[in-house]
Length: 138
Image (cartoon, one colour):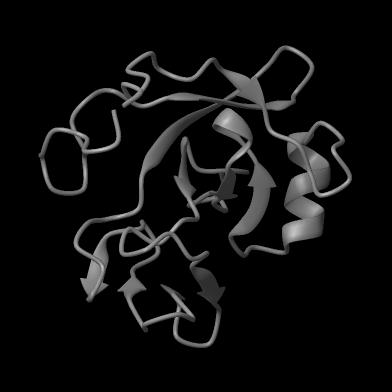
C-alpha cells in the first residue's frame, strides 16, 4: 500500500470558482460578511472567514470537508453554523464540531496577505487553538 504523504502542502494563493487569484478587497465585497468557499491547499475547498472588529478577513481558513465522511459542510447563515448535508454534523463559526457524527473539528490553514493583497493559505501544523490539541490533519 502507498504511504500517505506526510509532507505539508505548499502555500498557495487561494483561487475563486473561476480559478482566479482571490484578492482581499474583492473577496470582502463578494462575500458580504459570510464565510465563502475558495480553492485552497492541495486544490481542496476551504472557507475564508470574514474578519472581526473591522478586520477584512480572519487569519485562518477552514477546510470544507466534513470530518465524518468527507462531504462538503455548508455555511448556514440562519443558524450561524456549518452544517453537513449528508448526516447532519454541525460546526460553529470557527469550525469546532458541535454535533456529530463528525468526530473532529474542521481542518485549519493559515491565511496571510501577499504584497499585492492576494489571500495566501499555508499549512497549519501548530496546536489547534480551538481546543489545544495537536492538529489531526498535519
